[in-house]
Structures are given as C-alpha cells and as structure tokens.
Length: 598
Image (tube, rainbow, N blue to C red):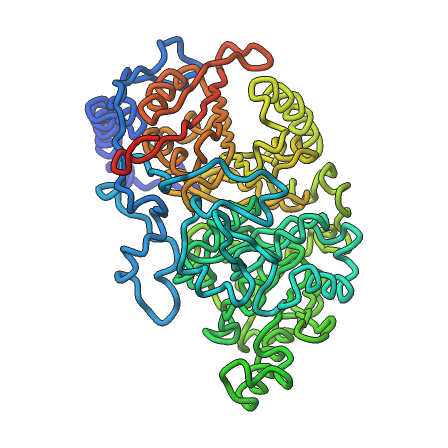
C-alpha cells in the first residue's frame, strides 16, 4: 500500500490509519450536526427575515421570502450630508502624518444608522443637464463656507437662489475652457479619440472633468471629504462623474493600466514624499503610453514662486526631485508650456528591465496582484504592465468610439471570458435596456443624468445607454470576478466596491440605480436592509431603482422599500422569466418632520 506520494506505508503507519479514519468520520458527523443547529451564514440571514431555503432560489420551489414591515425613522437633520465611511466625526481616531483619516473607515455594525437621510430644507429637483454643469440650486448644496473660501478663485459663486460655476480655478484664471484648449494643443491625442478616460485628483468642483465631457473624454473626478467638504457633492449635483477618495496609504479602487490620462491642478499632493508612493499609484492606474498632467507647484516656478508662499530654491529642489522620480518609474517628459507640464508613461517594458532591483523605487515582486485595489495597502514599488497584453497601450487600443464595441484583450483574464461572451452580453443589454425605457419613460431623457450599475459584468448596460444624456458608474463587487479592466478598456468608467459597506459618495447623488441579481449573489454576506438603506441614501428624491432579481427576494425588497417611503411595482422581465422579476421603484421627495412637512 502506497501513500499519495507513491511511498510505501509502513506497518506502524497502517496502525494509525484506522483510528484516524474513525476520528474523521466522527468529526464529519459532528460538523453536519452542528451545521443543522447553527446554520450557515446565509441561513442565519434568512432566518431573520423569513423562511430558510436550501439551495439557490432559482433551483427551489419554496415560496418567496416574506419579512415583517418596518417603517424606518428619519435621521436627524445634521445627517443630511452623511457619508458613513468618511465621517468627520470619526476622524480623530485616524490622525497620522499621512492623511489616513480621509480614507475609508466604515462604522461597525453596532454603529450603523437604520434611518432615512433627510434632504436639506428647501431641496428642489436638480437642474437638468447640460444646464446643470453651469448652475445648481443653493438649497440642494447649502455650503456657505466653500462659497466664501473659493469664490475669489472663480470655482463658484452664489447668485440669488443658485450657485454659479464660472469654470475658474487656481491654475486656470482665464477659465477652464482656455486651460483645456492649451492642454489639447500640447496633447493632440485628446482630440482624435485616442484619450477617452481620465482621472482628476484633487478635482475641486470638477470643472476640468465637466469641460472634457464635450470633448469626448470621460473623467472620474476624485477628492476627499476634507475641509472643503462638498467638492464631490457639487460635482455630482452638476451631473459630472465623481467619487470620494484620496491617495494615501491604500490603493485607489481601480485596476491597473486603466486611465488614459491623469491630471492634477494644484492639488497639493506631496508627490515626492513617502518614497514616491503617491506618484507610483498614479503610475499603476495609468495605461502604458498614457499621460500625467501637472499644473501648479513646482511647474513654472521661475514665474510663480512668489505666489506659492515658498522660496525659489525650494521650488527648484522640488522640481528636480519630481523629474528624477518620474524618470526612475519610466515616465518621460512629453511637453511643458506655461503652467502645464505633461509626462508620458512608457508604452513598452524595455525601460523597466533597466530598473535596478535594490534602488528606490524598484519593480514590485511577482506576488503583488496589480489589480488588487480594495483595501489594498500601497507599496513604494513600480507595477510593471503584463507584457503578454500587446494591445493594452494607448497607441494600440482602439480609438473612441470604436473601442466601446471591440472585445478587449484583457477579457482573457476573466474566467470563461471571450469575445463571443462579450458580444452576447452587449446584445443582451441592448434588448433589456430598450425594455427598461418602456418601464421608465424618463430613462433616455434629460430627467435622468447620474446612473449607477451596482453589480455590472462587462458594462453592457452602460454601453447600451451611450447615446443618451447620461453617464454610468460601473461598480464591480470586490468579491466578484474582476471584470473592471474590461470596462475601462472599452472606454467606460467604474470602481470596485463591497456592498456590505457604504459607497464613497454623498447623499442624493444618483438619479437611477440599477442592479441585476445583487441580492442573489450577496445575501449570504450583506444584509438586505442595509444595502437598501444605502441605496436610499445615495438616490436623489424622485430618483429610480431598477432591481432585477430572483422572485424569491422581490416581495421582501418591496416591503423594505415601502418602509423607506419608496413606491415599487413588479414587472415581468423582457423574456417572461419564471425565476426573475423586475422591480421598478421610485424614491419620493419628503422633508424632515423637524422642519415641517412640505
């Protein structure tokens, strides 16, 4: 008798096999018994709300999940801008040299709010796109502090009942349009569809990203919830894509080699500190051949250093350190003019082969997953693009809008992913989206602007809406198959997220939320009640939720929705599925009872 390695088993070893086998059988039986008593995580979740199921809802013939109706109370009025995972009330716990306090720190379950976040007094339906890019209701984002601090820089100014956005900024006093015109002259790839996706770090009120929309470039505007508070809220109120975030000790929630361009306009990020970790994160997320644009200190220090509250010697030193660091991570100076400097990331890997292993920064070891980006600590090393992808670089990938429909090379990274699966997904979502427009006539009109696909695969829903006046934030679960590189490669934007936690945005920032089978996929981890309360927090009053879900969950969702003051109705799917239904829900506008009903 041999063991699994083909080595003969001795008599002494044989004598231990029988009792070990008996022990194993006993343990298996005990595990089965205790499993029945204590149930699995999924069973515990279901036992709270109703009948326990064995197997998936699609395979089961049991009746739909039924739960007890609960009317959720209102949160107090001081929670009208509540961002659970970036709550200033918890900052003092995370003070350090790096801005870790501005990163995500979600409350434990015992501290979660089970209440409805109220709108500000006097809240009005948002101004419609594209007019909203230039103005919004003051009552919707009542922030007098930022008005006083930034009106002299022409970020925004209050006029009567509105905030006006003149398109100014610290580094573009002549307006964002002139600033981007100069940038386009320096980077011709911004004009011909080569550059499609961008990220703006320290975005202010997102005027740069807003201006690029008319030029066919889709930008994720990124800023933390800091002393400027409502920057991201302003961006989303204007109808411009944005998320709360900060470059610090954690990677940004995006895959590697995704953005065609990254931009920083006096964002005051200390690029050369901490071993260049912040700039190395920009390097990770920028596509090979992509661009990094910097305006502000220390660029053009010869003319501006007096206005930067520094010395010319300090600025010279900072600029030399920056150039040395960029060169060491295989960026090359592309162009420099006025207040703007542009670097380009190497399109091939020859440069990385010359990086000295014991120098700083060095290339990352093979054990670091380039796309791991959900609570993944940043490391001061260079993420080298995978050489097997020959069409990943900016000059190799298809230009916009062709790239939207070309099966990306990185689909081969996805389990069972293929060009055939990609095209089938596209075709399916074209059909389903047409059906959604029959259920919600506002979809496809200027009444819906900010859209989120809460658990997308390849971005098919977003692609089907590409000719409508909307933008879509494609969310890929941090626990699901990683398809986010495919989404970026086709010229769309998205982020990783775990729906057991709050999303990185302000309340009332999306007009429509779409989810397809999210509760079927995540009910064993995430409690339905909290996911729906989070949806209510980020959905605008009068906004919609399209919930495509197993018939096992739809009644329970409707009950919780009613407790959140939603109106939901159940519809058949476009193909008359026996296992799925579509819930179309609308959040109603209400005001805090502390202020009096309207």
